[in-house]
Length: 218
Image (cartoon, rainbow, N blue to C red; front, side, top):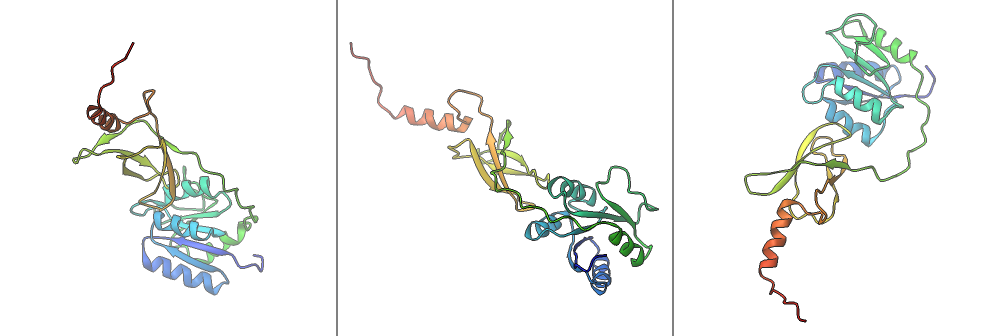
């Protein structure tokens, strides 16, 4: 392992596991942070990208299976180690997006070997601040208050959440994911030439009723 201290993020829903691994890794020269589930882990990653991610697979909320998939797609430079007591051996379980696998119960020495066997991630050039493409919404509904809303899927954590659409005047808008807090741009797939949602049509019709009619003068 190079002299350069690596930053590790440990993700496990069991506090005892997080505490024990953190103490062992700190004693061996690593800087560690912890998170209790996948959503908390993504928030930590966005605050500061770690060199290594060590994640349990079975967790409530966002599981390690989902977290590792999102991290591989969104943060490909992070070296990831999946860990679980439900799988045995050194092979990465099928379908798990990780660089290595650590079987719980085999001791911290085995984990340290796996970390040292993985190269430190290269210093990545920061991505340009290009505006992300919007999530397109083609279906929307009404809630009990008669407000139009749509279910938005966050491209960062894959969580879905409702968003009220009343009062929208621009086809592309922004909101924050209720789960991971990341910024989500979304757009409505308008179905007519006027580019209005159903409730906007109703508003326009109601407005037109109060406007005096005009006669064509010849």
